[in-house]
Image (tube, rainbow, N blue to C red; front, side, top):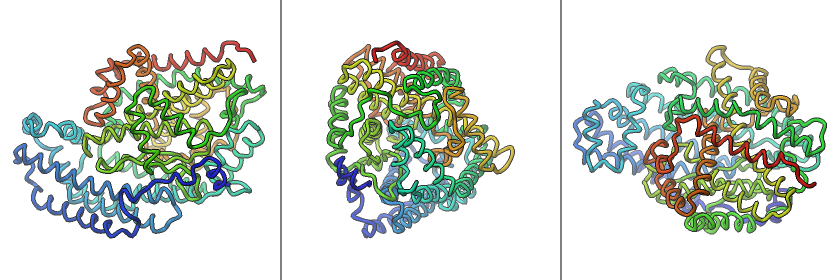
Length: 595
C-alpha cells in the first residue's frame, strides 16, 4: 500500500542523498574521521588540561577553534549515523554504526570535558577580561553560555565517568523505543504508525474508530516494554538532576533554552488559563459535524467543505515555495535547494522513523529533512514546518558550528512562521465562505496541537517526573491516569475520552528524546503570532529583520534576539496577546455562515 501511495504522490524517488556526508556505511572515510576525532581530542587534552586559567585571549581563541573543528567532525559522523538509522530502523548495520559513533562521542567528550569544567569554574574577573578581548568576540556568547552551567557541573573525574557510561544510558533506551515502535504494525492490514494515524483524519467515523482501536491494540502489545523505557528515562533524569543540583525537573531544559524558570512558568500558566478556547472550539466542531458526542477519535475529523484532494509532491513543492517567495525570495531560494538537491526524504517506507524532523548537520554540508508524506493538506504544513527549520539552519550555519545551535524555543519560531505563511497563501485561494471557515478550523486545530496540546503534555511530564521522584517507579496504569487527567483538564466536557486513548502517551517520542521540550512549540507558536502581526504592520521592512534573526542562530540569547522586534518575553501580556489572536480566529468561525 505504501509503495502505491508513494508512486501516486510522486515521492518514490524523493530520498535524501547521504553521500554528501559519506559514500555509504562501509566508506573508509568513516574510520579515518573517527581516528582523527580521537587523535585531535587527545592532542588538545595533552596540551591544555589545567592551563586554561593562564591562557591569553588569542591562545584561548585558538583552543576554541580546535575544539569546534573536533565537534564538526564528530557532528558529521553523528549526522550520517543518525540519518542512516532513521531511514531504516531495521538496518542492523546502521544501528551498529549509530552505537559506535555514540561510543566515539563519549570517548572524545571524556578528553575534552576539561574545557567546559575549567572555563565554567574560572574566576569571574579573569573570565570577564578574556571575554572583553576582540579576539574572542566571535565566541563570546558561546563562552558566556558555558558559564551558565557552573553550578551544575561535577568534578572532572565524575564528568568523565558519566560520559563513559553515556552510550549505554538514555540514548540506548531511546533507540530501543524507536526500534520497538518502528517494528510495530497495526491492524489486520499490518500498516505503519503513520498510515494508521492518518486515518484519524478520515471523513468516515468508522474508519477513525477502527484506526484508534488498531493503534491502541498495537501499543498495548508492547506496553510493558514502553512503560519500562519511560520509567528508566524518568529515573535517569531524576538522578542526573539530583547530582547536578537542578531545582526542578524542567530547569535543565530552561537553562538550555536560555530562559528563566519564571518566563516558562508564565507561558504555561497563560496557556492553561485559556483552555476555554479549546473547549469552545470542540463544542462548535461537534455541532458542525452533527454529532451527539465528540469522541477523541473525532477530534481530527475533517469539517464539511474542507478541500480533501490529495496533494502530489510537485504540487506541495509549488505551494511551499510560492508562499515563501511572497514573503522572502531568499527564503524560497534556500528552500528550493532542499527539494532539488536530495536534502529531503519523503516517502512512506517500512522501518522508517515516524514523524518529521530537520537535522542541522554541520555548516560545511547542509541540513536534511525527513517527512512521511501521505499527500493530505496537513502534510503540506508539515513540509513547510520542517523547511522553516531547514532554512533557519542553513542561514545560521554562517555563524559556525558552536554559534549556529539555536535554543529550541527560537528554532520552533522559524518552523511555525513558515507554516503560517503557507496557511495564509492557501487561504487566499478559497472563495467559498464555508470552505474558508473549514480551512480556518483546520488551522485552529494545528495551533491547538502546537500550543494547548503541547502545554497539556508539559503538564503530563510535570506530573510523571514529580511522581517518579516522590513515589518511585510508575505503573502503566499510573502513567495512563496522569495522561488522561492532564488531557481532560484541557478538553473538559467538550471531548469524551475513550479508554483506548489512555495509553496514547506511550508512542510520543519527545517525552524520551528531550524531556521538557514540548513547551517550546507553544513558545514558538505564540511568538510567531506576535511576529506575524508585526509583519502585517511593518510590511517589507520586517523581512530583513526576520532574515537577520534566522541568520543569527544561537549567537545571542532569545531575550536579545527579540529586542529588534520590541518583544518582551518576560511580560505576561505578550503571551496573552498571542492567545487573544487565537481567540479572534475562533470568533471568526463561531459567527454564522451559509451552509
